[in-house]
Image (cartoon, rainbow, N blue to C red):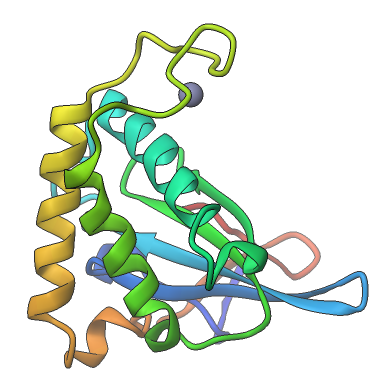
Amino acid sequence: MKLIRSFSVDHTAIVPGIFVSRVDEVGGGTVTTYDIRLKKPNREPVIDVAAMHSLEHIIATYLRNDNDWKDEIIYWGPMGCLTGFYLILKGNRSPREIYGLLLGAFKSVNESQEVPGATAVSCGNYLMHNLNMAKWYASEFAAYLEENADNPAIFEYPQTERLVTGEGQNFFDS
Ligand SMILES: [Zn+2]
């Protein structure tokens, strides 16, 4: 294994924000995977797992019902490290272009009376939810986004060297 200089990100330097994780050509179209990071990796406590699960349900429902965006949404889901979410959209927009969408999504959590789809039929672990904690994390992140709207650091990864394993494959884990 060796270190090479490439487009890469040092997780010990990531701050919360909205970042482009990768851009792919799929089936003749472009899709962009965004890193929606709520917590500093390895430097602050992660999101409570039940709250994370509720945020997954509530925001997925929001995104798939937003008339301006629902046809652009491919995927919304939690990172296993519990510090953020992945959002996959059609196209290749900059993080600033989806700032308003995400601010609206996280603000909507406070209006939720219940967690959508939290039933045994619709969810794989329907008892593992925490709406009140989900509201707390969502409000914290929405306030952070508003306070940092003009801060470039919330839209661009810190650049460093990335560990390359085997046949030039970058090690990706979030
Ligand atoms: Zn679920």
